[in-house]
Length: 169
Image (cartoon, rainbow, N blue to C red; front, side, top):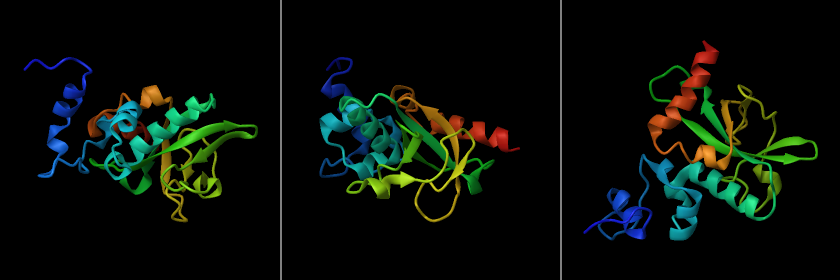
């Protein structure tokens, strides 16, 4: 069977290894491979797409609602800087009258105030991206949704994280 490019079959073939015995999509290390359109179309659960997918989906919906200046903010966990395997958290920046406001779509599903993150939205700024009461994440990149969706693997995300590692040295 020849798979048509950008077809439903192509999507499922590309992500076949994500499925369990009951053909349910399950969490995986390559959660970055889903675009906002795919997440929306296939109703992929947030626990599968992680913070990257949530950020892309939030940006998509915000744009559809008429909010023009929406960015995906890639932050890296500062204790991991310089290590081979770094972790991070993808959040959102929305341009408001007082500048860019940082938001965590994973934390503010029901309340805008819960989503707000205190801190400036500037490269290399250290913020409390996960609402743990500690400023442990450094902003590595501020991207459009389209730019962020090109980070389709952990390796591509690590390239962005490594920019911070080089600055911090």
